[in-house]
Image (cartoon, rainbow, N blue to C red):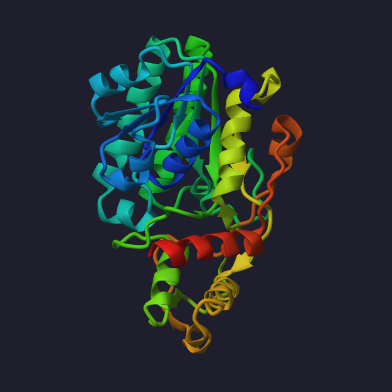
Length: 327
């Protein structure tokens, strides 16, 4: 896979973030020239500190809302892995303007800068939130509903812009609709922490995790290594039919929030037996949340040879081991 990237340069926007830093790490482990663009709004300097002495790594502190920063980052770049965004449905409901500025205006800036720099391929983080109020399961890429949050709108607009750039400028893109990604370096702190690192932190602190609703809402939780694999397949594929498409990035299995909390408790109690006795609590459902999420990954398997290696059990065990050592 990495043979196609030898002597090439890859730009990872949001490279100091959770997903971005894992992508940078994998690229650098395989001696690929890697540029990271980040403004540390949600990313962390500590996520990239281990890379700073690597001769194949270059860090640019900049903001995708600034077109000059985007042009600077795209100079002499062959491929872009665009991860920079403001995530979180609740954040977008509380502050739709900033979410739109980053996720739409920033995205467009990056598309323009990459086009102007004659980047070969632009891979971008899309979102399962695009499926909106469409209830059928599993989610298939060409059937979506109406968005349920400002965040979902921004991620769908990204797909529309990518399509327009291909049609008007012959610019190759691939969109990756992430489904509830988790794993090492995902931040457990802050108002918009994702459910898995938040629950892990609460269990370790001997606090009861609180599930929104009765715990029967379900998600297709996706371990970070599956996401890294998908990005690399998208960046290196020689299948022209695979380009200018969007793909689900998931494992293709559904786990309820109650099952998730029970699994986390199981693996954390291997480090501290008292965690097994912590009560799981409940509260009202959250505005904007969809009840169930499950991806079809057949398109990715067919066109990109996607073969995810981590199911929820294997992924949670890896994540818990990392958090126990690092929290």
